[in-house]
Length: 315
Image 1 (cartoon, rainbow, N blue to C red):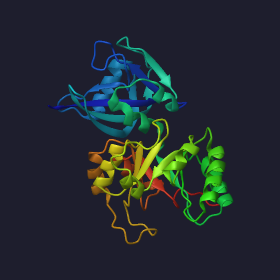
Image 2 (cartoon, rainbow, N blue to C red):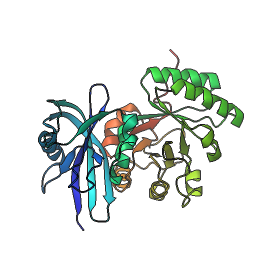
Image 3 (cartoon, rainbow, N blue to C red):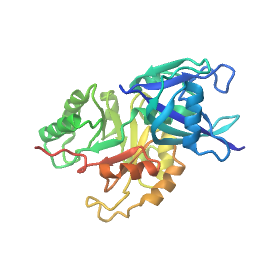
């Protein structure tokens, strides 16, 4: 069965809302919501197909777009490749040119709408930023909170609270304070024993590679509404992450890094190969800075994750 190549768009308004459209009842997956777009014709460039479809469906001209994520999904009756681009600027006023209902939705509310199954990774990608800050070890709880405050002011919106040198009691107390600080402003990911996850329902949970392998075959360990991430280093771990239903991963090490001098870096070509068959958002980790964002996107990643490069030092 030939895989149908579809160009789709996460269209953002100036105030950050995302445009979605309802599928006609007489079409495949009719009545569900979708990200606008359509089929890529034989020999047609994806960006050209996207521009054509959005003009036909919504009456808008694309003026700024970049690749966001590719998703391969097999329905019982068809196989699709969703080639998703993020559109951040356009001309014209979007309207349902084919009579389809439209809605501008806050990213956090996207899970409240019924989408085809293939769209789940797109919803995650639409909700996630392009930078993932991992807190540095060796700081006191107060130093970490001060750094989080500076990072929030610098528009970082996704954090992993990593503090392996703290005691369990100190980490849990810090997590509660950090969650209060991030409320309404950013998503906080915690690490530690999975039985803690129920105590922090507003936090996401980031699995170590060891935890990932330990829970292989056991299904998603946290509720669907709670973010779940995992640290991955190879194709096997990416496959386990997919089976567990994670929402996103870090993939490392991409480049040489002083924190793991003995680790063999993957390099950009291997990263691109690994992500070719992976359907979830992925943050590149290891030697990354914001300068590497274009390289990460070119390889098919959501963005970059980093410790020192994203951690704002005191003025």
